[in-house]
Length: 167
Image (cartoon, rainbow, N blue to C red; front, side, top):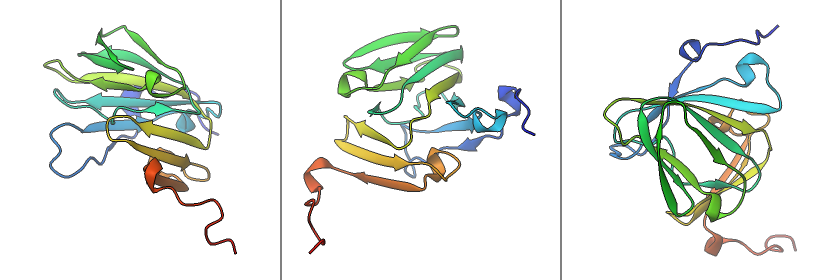
């Protein structure tokens, strides 16, 4: 049986896989929700080095997220605004369009550590306003977003026709 308690420092961590040589992206993440038996809420512990961010600026059309800052300082991009964050802050990221796009950036001198908590809507569609991309993700039966069962990343202007290949 899964134990319902796991310390963030004991959670199995893995590096994100940003583009080689990226000066902007890089973090270590530890998915925790499934590890403690949670089925309705996800949780992921994230550690970001100074000057980096874990993920691109994005919004979810299906899931809600919340971030609890444990350590360090940074900037929370939310829609068109930016907010300073520090240990003890809680950041909302409700589902919605680009007005709810979000990203945590470590603008401090030491590591930024935070816990992401999210609803588990699957599949989800994620938009990336900075790059004009979107992603359609179906995680199940994969273990987490990094091992999604189905993932398509594209741009709206390259969409195929609904009836294409159906003759």
